[in-house]
Amino acid sequence: MHTDTERCVAAVQSKDARFDGWFFTAVLTTRIYCRPSCPVVPPKVHNMAFYPSAAACQQAGFRACKRCRPDTSPGSPEWNARADSVARAMRLIRDGVVDREGVPGLAARLGYSARQIERQLQAELGAGPLALARAQRAQTARLLIETTGLPMAQVAFAAGFSSIRTFNDTVREVFALAPGDLRTRAARGPGTTAAPGVIALRLPYRAPLNPSNLFGHLAATAVPGVEEWHDGAYRRTLNLPYGPGIVALAPRPDHVACRLALTDLRDLTRAISRCRWLLDLDADPVAVDARLRADPLLAPLVDAGPGRRVPRTVDGAEFAVRAVLGQQVSTAAARTHAARLVTAHGVPVEDPEGGLTHLFPTPGALTGLDPEALALPRTRRTTLTTLVAALAEERVRLDTDTDWDRARAELAALPGIGPWTVESIAMRALGDPDAFLPTDLGIRRAAEHLGLPATPAALTARAADWRPWRAYAVQYLWTVGDHPVNHLPA
Image 1 (tube, rainbow, N blue to C red):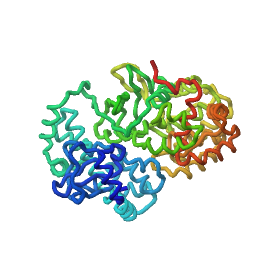
Image 2: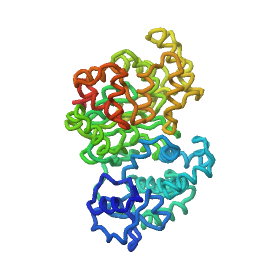
Image 3: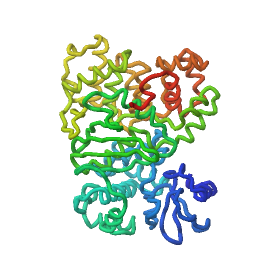
Image 4: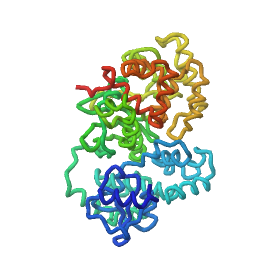
């Protein structure tokens, strides 16, 4: 995108928020960089330069605009829609892998050398993994500075900086303000209503966003003790590297309100990343809806509720276990089976609001479960225990950087894992935007209602026109039926 100067200039001059996160505008005269929708008067064309990432802008010596705050732009939708090494690397960097494991750890996860990863990221994003991670640390630091009263030393280490001096230098370089000045400016703005120990922030997204299917699905399938819908917000526990956390997410007209209670603030970056992934907030709904609207049979569904997202998960292994529990049973029965596992094997947590009690059990914790204690058919018990063993031994990996095709093959090789389960996991755990469920009962009923082919093979052939957004087509097709997943709870 950033190499198409004519399109970039048009987006900047029209202040088009749809392109926020796709590219950044650097102003040569003021040495600042902005998001395309910056509210100030656009600079002259010959004073504009365009970069693919905030890190590239910072490396070139530009500082963040104080008006539009480009560091808070939604992420590029490319990183969630692609499965190549650069996209997988960006998802890992966003999860804080470089801060925890360094560039060698990032390269090892991707199966490349550190030099290859450096070269690929530099070629596409104008910055290497260290610079990209540094830009993310700066954003996390700003968030902690502005939303908490923590001493700056604690902010520095919680954001991932190795020293207070590096923290101070980075904040001054990126934001042209000292950390203390950032906090002073924030104190002049609207106050936060967050309780002590809770971080309140806004999660931006590209409009439109339809909260009905997104939050409705999460609330309707919530596992008691792990998830709940409470006081207009979806709440759940989070299993994070440095300790458990609790998040509350509530839809707002121009953002998603997020409240995080963390055991260790070093988990903030990963927690935000997991929440954005869960709600599919980096999607480009305009591009998705335009593609699906081109089909005359889907167009009325898109027009009735544009901006549907794919409800995902905060943990791929958790969703895989829940998908097996949900095979050929109702939503209520699947929740009941999952709740029993949580009570028996989940780690207890403390929730000041009282509704959440456990973390969902990890595959390692479930390896010791007694199959005879499961109120499931014998074949499904075998499927569940085999899946749990494969996840615990990492013979099957379901992380954000996992190769989609490889994961599909590994899952399909397990007994009792059929196409519906594989594609459900690909859609909601792996984030493949083209995952499709032609055998799903709701999809088949919707197809019959709309006059689409009813058989899985014929429907799959017909759905080729919806690629690469078939997972979003699934969300629209599900709206044909009157199911709680389509509605926000009262």
